[in-house]
Image (tube, rainbow, N blue to C red; front, side, top):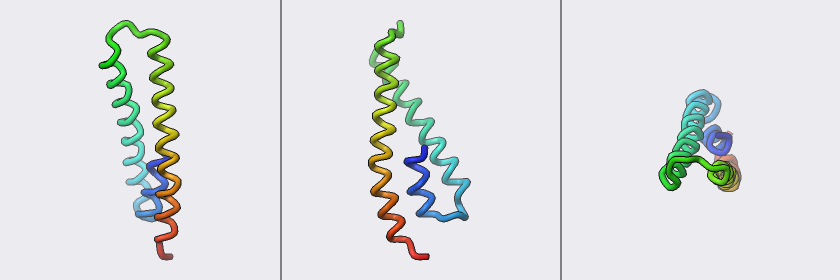
Length: 83
């Protein structure tokens, strides 16, 4: 959620802060729901411990990837913004 929120915050400024917070919240929830649905589709019914750990690891990896991408994007937007 934070990886999506900070670049949007610098693009829109303080006027649209709440709107971008809601957008990033929905994107974060949608990402977790989408990954969970994908895992449930790939591995049918009885949930095993391995599937739960795999799901957590994939969600953790996606969160790290979003933050790694978010940092340069946020820095770029911050430097391009005129105050």
